[in-house]
Length: 188
Image (cartoon, rainbow, N blue to C red; front, side, top):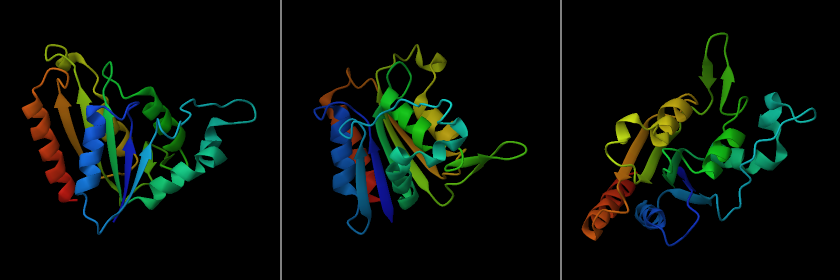
């Protein structure tokens, strides 16, 4: 299986990076794995369209071809990112806006959308510090990515793994989470 890890965190000293390393270390060597580090890549998240760059032609933007090719290559996508202000990092949102576009990831039908990424599955791993009293009211972009983006593009099944309160949890809890991640990764 071809696995693409889309990692989104600006520092390699983060807990998200520890998660990335745990995933990379525990995926079976029988799989082909590529990691796309959006910050290291200096991915340009700004979506541009104007008179000469039409929104309907975003699937033909040459600068995004290598990313579309990676998505096409992958059988399984793994997203690793923190939730900030209940949302994914802007660079990841820009990646979704610029790569998961009409004509590539989906198309419009008379009624609704038709996903083009059939046969792909995904695993979303998020961390956040949202206080529990805010959680019921917060938009959760791990769930948005799962239900409103990937499923719309016909990616299924999609597993969502979340760790809350990362700044306040104990080292034991962090270690347990990393062990859980290792276990899941080893079963891919």
